[in-house]
Every structure is written in structure tokens, then in C-alpha cells.
Image: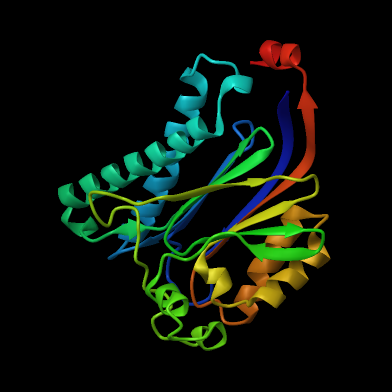
Length: 268
């Protein structure tokens, strides 16, 4: 048997209350079943360039892969989809590096990246940096990604508690980024989807302002209205200071059902 998922998406990006420009970028591709979020960094305008390039290039690569592969969906294994994600992010990494070398004003630019891709009954997550993915299931909020940051390394080593980490002056120092070096290490894993799941992608502009319980409260209150939930998350982050750009994407599993072999062949 194969599976078909029906997903609902919503997304929003906001400059916040302190930064002069928005260096985050988001992309939602409903028909292709994936979404991308990037949080850029660098000199004047460079972060904005890096994040925009990253989202556009990853989307381009994934859509090309989906359209060019001749095999029907039921025979596309999870490992194939994982390869697509790794290749797409690696391609974006190469192009961002090239742009930085060709334009002096872009020197040192880079970006985080987080991608979710629906594959049959699974959601594949690929990420680099400290932009995150959470799952809201049966009123429980779970963080699914682990930050690639200096602070996370200290937490893992037992050098600082999660509670004290909230106030660390180095919490935004990341250890991996698209455009940082020639070889990029992408973390990819898959999660079994269930009907009613809501997956939240966000930049650290959200998680630096809101803690786990505050995000959970908003998700609980607005889980039936994704667009309103996006706005409520951003408004709340701004109410707590809005010190960075804030971006969120929500993906809700509306329906997940098995399809027969013949249905899958004719749909491919």
C-alpha cells in the first residue's frame, strides 16, 4: 500500500521591533508537499540575500527532483527523498558560497535552513543551524530538531542547564550554516505523521522571545485556525520585545489514508 497525505499550510514572517530589515525567508509549496524556512546572517543586506537564495534554490531543486523522477510514488523509498533533501541543501550551500566570493558586499553571509517534506505517511525534516521544528500532537508540544549551536553543545556536555541557557549571551552562535564552508553537514530524520498533527517551523526570533510553555499555550488556543495561530505567535514574540526577525510556518495533517496500488499508479 501507499499513502496520501492532505496538508494545510500557513506561514508568516515579520521584521520584529528592533531590526531594520527582515533577513528571514520562508517558502510554502502546497502542491509539492514541502516548506522551507531560512534565517540569514551577514553584513548589510547579505543575510537577506543568503536566506532568500537558500529558500529559492532548495525549492527549485526539490521541485525538479519530484517532476523528473520517472518512478511512481509508491516505489520512491524514504531514502530517495532523504537524498533529495541533502542534495538540495548542498546545492544551496554551494551557490551561496559562490555568491559571497563574487560580491564583496556578501562576504561572510550565511543562513540557517529547515525543510519539511511530506513523503507518504512520513514527514522528513532536514535542518542546518538553530531554526527549529516542533510537533503539536494531542495537545502535546515536542521539539523535533536539535540546535546546531555552541550553547546546545554546552547543554549536551552538562556545562549549563536548559533553564540557565535561556539567558546565555552566546545562544545565537551556531555551529552549522548554509554558506559557511565547502562541505555542509545536514541533519535529516523522518517522523510518522498522524491526522491532526501540526508541525511548526520557526526562526530563533520566536524561540528567543517565547519559551516552550508559551508556544504551547498559543498552539492550543489557535490550533483550529493556522493563519490566526501564525499571527498570534508573531504578535506574542513582539509583545515580549521582538528583538529579532520572526518567522513561522505551520503544517497541519488534515487527512492521511492508504491508497491501493492501482490508485497510486494512475495518480503518478
